[in-house]
Image (cartoon, rainbow, N blue to C red):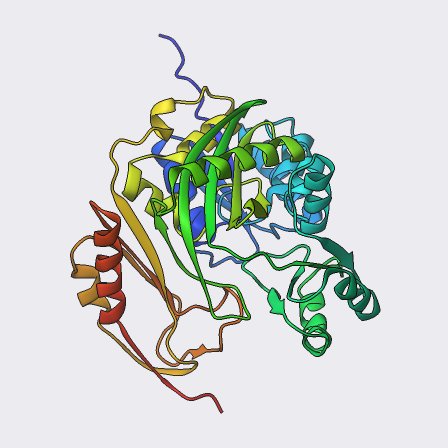
Length: 409
């Protein structure tokens, strides 16, 4: 009798809610899944085969954990989705001779300043920008760029420390907060670009072969901050604008040197054309790749991306729409305060075409004023055969959930 093929083992970097979808997909692919996360109570851990507690952002912690897994099982691939740890993924891939992009490329996709520099060098349109590490440098940069501008830490996600700045006094007040959110002690100031925002997921099969997965419309609210209220698939924008946006995405892939795996973009459709706001060498989080994409299209880009990191051939059926429906995600954000009651959750889950109701808070918890995508009360995902139906179904569930709070003192 022939020996059965060895079960392949995947290392997932992170075990949070968005990586949970990746872990579940990998298990359906009959993979052994090992995970690392600094939180020993991370929600994805119960779905995995093995776990080591380690930071996903500090390679000096992550690499020894990966090496330990490699001794136990012989890792066949390393992967993440929905979180900005692509540099950790790349460093582990290089150290263990696994497939992936070079660490230098991953760094370009996580450091907003280096990203802007790489895009500009290759002629990709970017806002006017300066990377600074002091208030005096920030003032000089603002004088050069002009108001309004956007301030953001170079190395964080979830819109932490990101704000639209309209005056010098505003800059002085905001700069310390933005700097505090940067582990590198660097802040980027850039021209504010007007226009609607979209999120694009792509897969790079090999150099020169970039596959478009989905384009979602992002709803950005709560100015002067940039809080994502939700997203909707498919996009409502004209096809020619979306084609231009995908062309810009391909230019971004080439500029950063991403030759394998996922690449996602937050992009503004400005009056002068598409402008890349952010890039990342991973699939989208925010329930995009894990929930709304498969609901709207039947595709499975997570499986496709895992196949690429394992060295398997890309199955085009995974990234070809099986149907053309619509899906919407909307956030819950009641008034800030101490949560005194939550009701309507079970009823919301029972409503027509509601796929997911996820709460981040419990009674007795505290909701602070939102200044980023961190700290939302929860999320609802619904779908329909048309975009309007999907949005209607989702909002019906949102309105059904009642979260009462006491005012913060």
